[in-house]
Image (cartoon, rainbow over all chains, first blue to last red; front, side, top):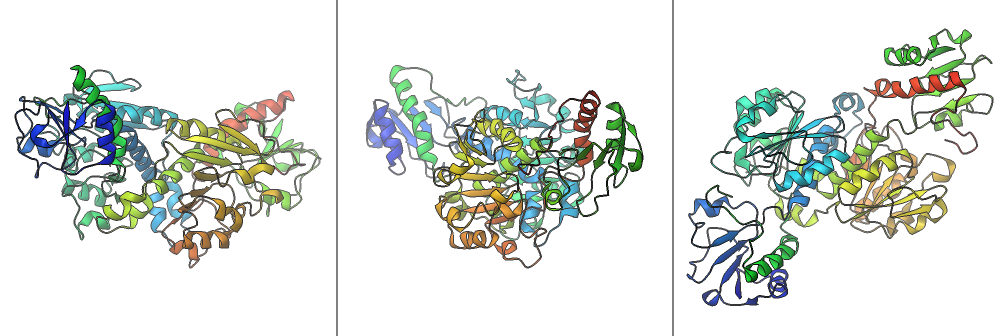
Length: 301
Length: 301
């Protein structure tokens, strides 16, 4: 089985292809393509390519570009980086609840100001909205830290370890009942601006919001308003709308908004972290088995 | 059994005394004293006071003032706030490793700068130096986050869940072998400036140092040098020397130093959090049982 890696060669991925039983080839001769680039420079595929392996979890640009269809199999990296993103999300909650964000910018001892604002993760309830691989990786971490979890997913099928699992159409129930919120849902038409002005009003005033999904799941203007008026305590965003967030955007200036530049899953170690999954998928493709993280064109992820 | 609460009345503690089977009284008639104040305004005790219950874990000012001796029993709040401080310490590690501290002050999208600097807690080894109640509360949290723990304590008696436990006299072995360091030892003559210039040189350049013990366990001038030269990656300090850290101190200006104003255990909820322990100790005192967190004058905590 011949596999092309593009747009650039990568040592980690090449080794994984070989270890899984494949051989490296030019695209014209390839049975499969491993693509580390974006949708905008995606190549014209020969008909013989039966499998495209993407190396990111968020692949909505490929859907928007009309690239993903039933003519061949597509797989993404959903779940591969879950531990990494889950760790980030737990850290993001602690950054806000424990007032680290306000401490970083302090230039004097402000105990009287910060002490009463500290909240604890232990004893709190965290809602994970879009509780897939990242959410499942968060649950044991949150439990060890003494928090309970309410999960929201598409089907409402109970998530192990969640106190309650709600289907997406009942997400409205979660905003006024949980203490803090992690948005980890795939970006689809159904989740666009899921967190809007009305939702932000329903959240407790002490709530912290963490977004590790895609920027457009949160209505940015509504969030700026909510952070300014104190409708919620704060937000930690690894993804923004627009992204990259331009210099001068009001979010940069808000003390209760922490913006990290899409580093919950770092690019630096990406292909090294993805290599074991690629190796397994090469093996499965050779045997005709179901691929890990196969994309379902009908649902959009 | 008559118990006096001073220097001020406190509803949470008063309720705990009564629930434990005691009655509230003036100091002159008291069999026991619950003291929420400092050493500097500690009262002259009638001989009939057989037990003094302090409500903090760090009681070295009472030792320095010569107040603690064998004439009566003393107990402190060691371990009571362990969950709270452990949660802070885990958060502090994530603040540094995941580059939240640098993100907070950013006013533009700096992925190229921050992405390569991100480290993960999963896969790392954290040394807990002074692995008592706080350290034991950290271990399940760190395990759930995928980190291993090396413990250092006075006796070297193995700590549950630690990969290795070293006695204090072998602490030197830990500095060059762990990835990150949490200082949680009691402040005694033996731990004063435990982390000095030599120790900071031995730590990996990627190490983050967290201090939740007392400021004087770290040599502040040596730490400033180490942070400036990049001998270590950064430090998160909830306690400082001097404390409060004065405005204008060089630590405030260092991007890789995060100073929180002694809020790992918040004063705001202190007596409410301590009340269950007081109730139990009142019960034990009445029955003549060993008190929780009884102070051993011979070791200094």
